[in-house]
Amino acid sequence: MTSPTPRPVDPITLSTVWHAFQSVGREMRHVIDRTAQNYLIAQLHDMAAGIWDARGRTIAVPEGPTSMFLSQGFTVRYIMEKFGDDLRPGDVILCNDPYKGYCNHLPDWGFFRPVFYKDELLFVVLTRGHQLDTGGAFPGGYFPNGYDIHAEGIMIPPIKIYDAGKERTDVLELIWNNVRWPEGVRIDNYALMAALQVAENRIVALLDKYGRDTIMDCLEEMLDRTERSVRGQLASVPDGTYYGESATDDDGTTLDEQVWVRLEATIKGDELILDFSKSDAQRKGFVNCVYSSTYSRAVAGSFLFFDSALAEFHNEGSMRPITVVAPPGSVVNAQYPATVGGSPVNVGTQVLEATVDALSKAMPHKAVASWGRRRGHYIAGIDPRTGERYVQTTTDADGGAGAVWGYDGYEGALGMSGLGSINRGSIEEIEIRFPWRTVRWHFVPDLSGAGRWRGGCGMLWEVENLGGDVGAATGSSDGDLTQPPGAAGGQPGPLSKMYIRRGEEILPARTHRMIQVRHGEILGKVSGGGGGVGPPAEREPQTVLRDVINEVVTIPYARDVYRVAIDPQTLTIDEAATRELRAGPGSASPG
Image (cartoon, rainbow, N blue to C red):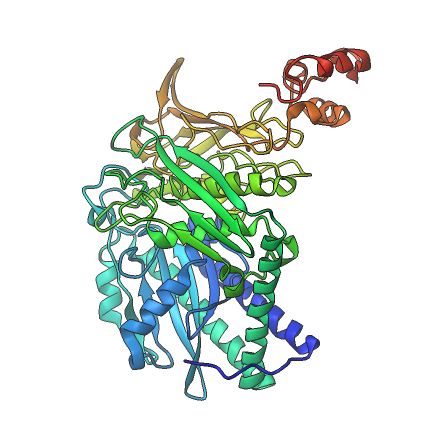
């Protein structure tokens, strides 16, 4: 579909239309929030929503995990090519296939609805959510050592589940028959589809109010404005090639062998090339990323360095100056039938970390440190209170966000790949839903990357198994062996650890493994926080004192790392000792 040359649009109409599309995206998320039952979707908000035009151009993606939607223009174009003229009002297409549909990993199911206006296809709306289960060898996902991707769950290429408004019940029943909790998944699927209908209603109302041509003219101006802004900002950065890298602990199959993502970011004029060609080869284990997932993370990492006023308004125009290179057969562009189940946390996160590592060198005044690594799991067992099977996951154990130039990392934010869009859970909700009791959950002093601006705090988290013996997949964890990078002289986020407490005995547990937790045992995690930005000895002494008073930094750590001497009795700064410490060798970048 080609568009005529857009006509000028008055600024009030443009602003109204632009914000209206953003509001539709947020309303879709709100509908899902209020109607889904899955803990991951309804409580933790592991979902995304967005709007594309009929050419597959990204129009509105205000919030969500980066891997779920920033690359979904590829999927929209794939759907257009597959169905062609067979798309009709009332259709809904379901897809989760990374290889035949440009999706992320199998648990993230995407629902697409074409939006017609006066018989013309103008938009496609998307909702995507992490399902309670998608089949596969172990409940929930993120388990290592699948033979190939088919062992990870049901693969759904783009398929109509509503055809011209009529439900294809037989297709849905076939899909739901291949998951362990079909009723729960059914409810969530209808929640995601209901949000699509709301989006269509809002967009049609907008077209009725302003007219088709005015809306389309506004869209062209929206895309052109973000493109001009991004190109202008890139043009202000010195041309050059900047290197970034990051590693995950292992691939879950070849144990304790780190898997590396390496990036050469080249800025030339008003364009940015993100070249991952030096990354490791595709792995046997489950950490592989497909190209669409790599593209999403790399673009999201780039966005962090552009004007923050654009943060919620990025669209296709923002992406036009960015090229992402990822050779087929590499760990960042895996080929069928490679397993990809762990990639949102492992390698996907590293793509984002390598991107901010490189661009922090290009734009040190906008430096971004990486966040505390994900410390999740999937536990499957029987709830003795009901006799029913359950699967439980959590985001609660994760450390905080990385620092950025001028600001400490957010406390409590989690999961860099979600950029804060995924929430921590509620202790009360967890204990009602699952036979696990929270024993301890608090910040840990000295467990964040030090810097002029420090990372968000690390976390201690312990829960007791009140049910029967269970299996747990730790594939959604990372950071036992590798650290999230700091930036501009800041220290990386600390290493993490996991353990099982069996009476007085403490048994180590590791990422990317299958472990067993018996009744009455405690599963514990000590999770490193985010990385720091800038040399620690440049942190304001009064800010270090505040951290000591708030018990996130200890007095010895303040002295040894920040070079600030604090009297333990009076909790005041010893100015003379501090000057002497900071004048000593290595004070510009200790550690």
